[in-house]
Length: 458
Ligand code: GLN
Image (tube, rainbow, N blue to C red; front, side, top):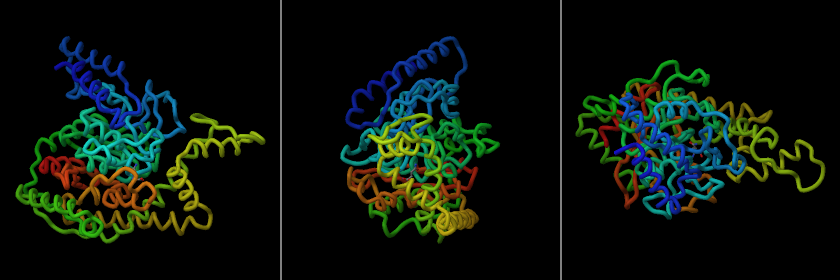
């Protein structure tokens, strides 16, 4: 089949199902077909092209794209067009992958259900009454609904892995610094990472190789690429690999169906020759608490740029003087949703004079303890394993009024962001007809191990 046929088939699928799924905020029809047509022409002329040339992709709407709107799921950026491309987008263009459009997310990537989007929730293709995870529910739902074969997400506390888990997709959070963050709208800069969403481990490896590698525009970018991911995904041999079961990420709070699929996965890995060991990470119980201080602190600083002056939305006070503070206040009151406001207030409080050491300072110390837990665990195991999320997809509205219940979806994914280590979520079968995700974690720069272990479970 030609690239135009493949791209058109996905555009047709989007027209057919996206009214119900709401995975896309913008569909990039003309440009996608043009890129596909150029690929077909180049191929006919015998040009040598990248393996993924002509393979369409969906982009989480937190990643800036020239020529397509970028909203971050917020009213604050409604109708805004970036004057530049994110580095990952430049690389996708260089590989000549048609971009199908921009996918829905929780506002500024804050959430675990995509219900905090200013543009309506995305629905889980497995059951339209259920959430597709978040914040990158749009990317995961697009892949799961066959609207796109590949997508990009961002993961600050689990927003690639948890949506992948609850939609039966593969999702990868690369090593911090392995993929450039230039052009990813910042949520919490020390935690954010762009990564692939796909249906197979090999597809994710191919995509991470396209988007990864050093970028001088990101000061936290690693100097070297993180190893041969495609080879590892093709290999899938876990004979002799030591796989560490994290004691603290199972049991209480995890659904029985999730734990059942998890045990079966361990059996499968054992049958494939892996050595299963138990490891303990005693400080992981503080990870969620530390995350909800560090993330809002960084977010409150990153979101200060939405001031109604420089770009994005501007709302004017209904009456009274038009001072800058009052314009800023009116803009933020109207432009930001509930959850974003909650986190800005939490973050500014945690950073305020007199409280800085007690909150932000303590959270940074916990972060160090979590890194040490990982170091100790990786001395005993090559990769670690856990369920990706304690539960399968829940019903829309179920956790919307209970922020803590929403936050608990990420207990198993957050430690990786705090330590900068890479993680992958692999489909691990169904519980009551809903997908369960299995997570592998590897040491920093050892992303290849995730692909090798992930391929073994596929
Ligand atoms: N669900 C988590 C949060 O709300 C993670 C978000 C993310 O990874 N972007 O912060």
